[in-house]
Length: 275
Length: 252
Image 1 (spheres, helix red, strand yellow):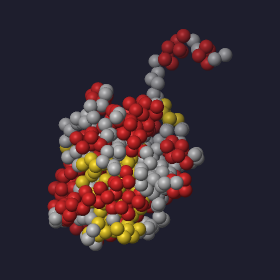
Image 2 (image 1 turned 180 degrees about the vertical axis):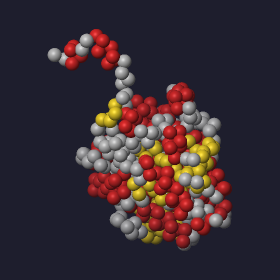
Image 3 (image 1 turned 90 degrees about the vertical axis):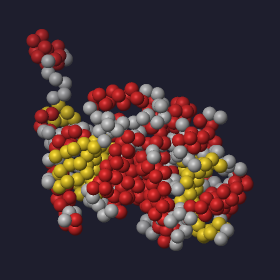
Image 4 (image 1 turned 120 degrees about the vertical axis):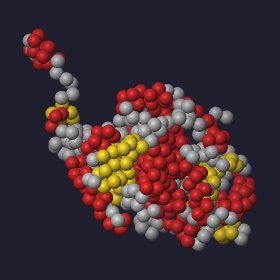
């Protein structure tokens, strides 16, 4: 006999009144957790994978103080791509953000820094022209004000709906990063789940120091594309933080709970010559 | 001609191999191999040669011209050590104050297991950082497919030219259709929406010039057009050159 059929009407009503999202499954270790045990940090208690945060959630967890920059910058839909402006408008409403990145000036552990946080909830954090513009302006302003930059990468890669204009952002941001670097200023990247494609092939891999959250997906080409190309199944740990660190592209794996203090230490260590 | 016709024309075999093209543009081409870290990628051909009295660095992607070379180059898809060879040759060009010509015909960076382990993304990212600050002229010419970040890595030029049989795209129209509409058979529609033809790019300022691919005569035509452009770019001092290149890409 099926489970539902054994329930009384009252029990059935009580059950249907329960919210559906009390339990969550970790996309990395596949274990289920009672949602409340994840806490504000939204970390899997079994494997320490960090669930995807919105830019505002992360900013609240990380900073003592934050002033947003360029909040009004939004895409001009350069290709007049069918349905794109509607999609953006709906996302703007749902996320209360104009684009896939939040930028501004922040204090982390008492150190002042320019800060960018990408948000996978906004078209998978893809690199649109407005995303690129906000990040470029962040580096330009950081260079002008002699500030370090801390950037949280979270992106599926290029923004398809903006075609070549998305690709051009990789070049545009890169030259702003290069100028910031030439001014002797620190750039710390934190790779989070996921960091892929054109973002990996530009500013996510251009930091002086590269940190990453545990088990994040980090790579250039998509796993499926690679599997189809080489006709081979790839292992579970492929393109995850731990294997990317083994390959030599990450300085430290930092659990989410340690990020504020670790960033504060790194920022302080780079203030010596400037005082 | 529809946008998808343009894509197919860009993918067709050329009337010349990449080496024939290079040897038609410069004389006494001396090829330089290897990235000094891991290996030599035959999908990137690099070296130096004469453009009349001017020594130039040439960096080109190569799709191969028979089964063996096509397999070896993964049909023109560079590995990270190919991009690092390009990086090494660009640094050398800067040291010896040589202008750089890049010739691009690639479906994109190779999506492979080793490529990922050796930092395909990081290799491209490094090349973009370097090219953005390089104190010598860079002239980038798309002569076939210009696929995504793998093409952009060599297309951070003071000027970007396209032949009338080339394309440039954030992703192949097939990949684009499969991501957006879960149907790669809609590639022709995707190509239309992506606005990936040379004319579109000229209008958008992504390309500065369209040159006809005249087949067997193309190398000679190209040589004639490259020289005055490089000479003009060499008139700028390096700070002005870098600033102008930055402004060219800042506008997007």
